[in-house]
Length: 189
Image (cartoon, rainbow, N blue to C red; front, side, top):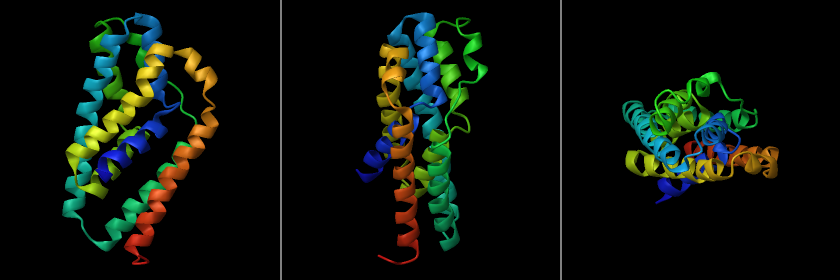
């Protein structure tokens, strides 16, 4: 249950103002068909985050040394810093419309998530918890919590949510997890 709840909270907060959330707004504005867009986000996130959580879990199983635990802790601290950097939407949405709302969303979200902070966080969460399905469920739920309102509310949501505050809260969450892992690895508790 800890893997599910932590994964959900980490990704839901990290996703606010992220380029995938901006992509959701662009696609909603362009297609004006929220349900196929939401289904595309869900499909892409399940595939991408399952592979990321599996990678993290498998790598952690192979590299179980003390230094690897420090590396995982450091990755959460690095994510805290990265979360403070505002995201901009890449040109992925420019091709929107070619394949319809669902397929365009699924392809665009899968590609935009490659190397994104939420994908890296999913790898780290997979390495931390070794529970691929719970981490995937949690990170996917976090993505949906952040992106479904963006699909329905679009630009109005972005204007009303103080993104700098959300980024700081997300960064503090990543930092807290990283420091907790550092302290646990060092045997402080």
